[in-house]
Length: 132
Image (cartoon, rainbow, N blue to C red; front, side, top):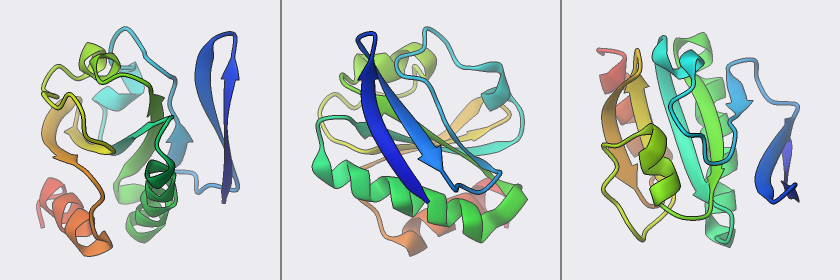
């Protein structure tokens, strides 16, 4: 898997190449939650476009998507300011730290985790989301 982050028409975009079918790039700064996020279990990684360490989390999110296969969808979304996240997920209260990992169940925010986390910790949160 590889990815590129670009600015197109003043908006940050991420393009994924070679990702698993349950992993997708999500648009920068949506006005509301996308309809596809309202169905099923999702891990959404919100990475700050200005943070080099957040780029490491992109590969981690994709790896978790491979580990859980079709049981969980993985979305990867760039952001520049935290208020962009609150537009589509008002449960987010963080104003400075990143990355932000958001777990959704049928569109409802089940958990928000801030910062770099171990694979085991994130896998445990996903297991909880899946009711294991």
